[in-house]
Amino acid sequence: MGEFVRVEIEDGVATIRLGRPKMNVLNAQMQGEIAEAARQVSADDDVRAVVVYGGEKVFAAGADIKEMAELSYVTMSVRSERLQGFTKALAAVPKPVIAAITGYALGGGLEVALAADFRVAGEGARLGQPEIQLGIIPGAGGTQRLARLVGPARAKDLVFTGRHVKADEALAIGLVDRVVPDADVYAEALKLAERYKNGPAVALRAAKQAIDSGLDVDLDTGLEIERLQFSALFATEDQKIGMKSFVDEGPGKARFTGR
Ligand code: HXC
Image 1 (cartoon, rainbow, N blue to C red):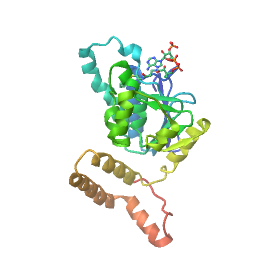
Image 2 (image 1 turned 180 degrees about the vertical axis):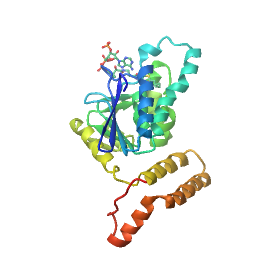
Image 3 (image 1 turned 30 degrees about the vertical axis):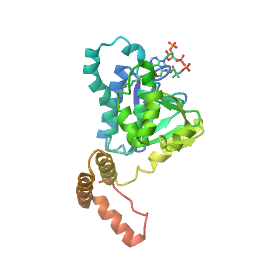
Image 4 (image 1 turned 90 degrees about the vertical axis):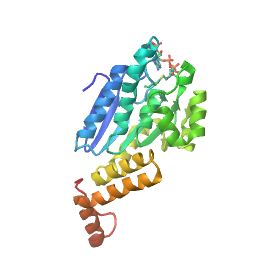
């Protein structure tokens, strides 16, 4: 268990809890701990869905500017691979991942949220990629995942200006999927996660992989990824259970095993 990142598992849902006073600022150690937490929940078959939560006040105010301020080009060019590594590890979790955002999700903090599948935000949340104001650009996936999520023009608006987006605008542009009162953010994210905990885990993994990989390739290659994943699912117990249950009992009654 890390100093700044804890993994709490309850009833099939893991919470990756960020905790570094005051703003969950992501120093190098914390980035490593997020990567480690992502690998842990990926490997644990009992974990069926994941929530990433920064606590009641703040999601994460970005990478640690004080730590980065004096870095040279040479140091950063080596370190930048690791910098992308922690959000890559999170994006690669083969299960549904939901970011529960209260307060600020800025810079590297927003990039953590972008590596999730869904984002629930509190009414007081503020999201942005303010790196331009530091004379840099997003470095943990922000130029890529943001553009894929909200489109290139909106991503450029946010990245060129560095402005903070409030929850209602974030919802309108698809940057977050749901806005709830601040106090309800974590409970709402858990509720979304719980939807998946008795689901067909192998099919959910295949669906996530097909959609995410497909976004990076041409349509024919994407369709081929889908075709292979689709046929592979006929080797699972859950495909047999799901279809038999439909035939015998009607839709939505299947009791999946996750195998
Ligand atoms: C280091 C930070 C920090 C950060 C806040 N703090 N954000 N320290 N790095 N990213 C520190 C402040 O220095 C201050 O420390 C304390 O947290 C509280 O912050 P305040 O500014 O006093 O609070 P407030 O006025 O409420 O403003 C909050 C804020 C602002 C809007 C979040 O702090 C802010 O703009 N922070 C920077 C956000 C940012 O630029 N993020 C992108 C970083 S670059 P003291 O000791 O004075 O109490 C990045 C690159 C990603 O993320 C690369 C890949 C990972």
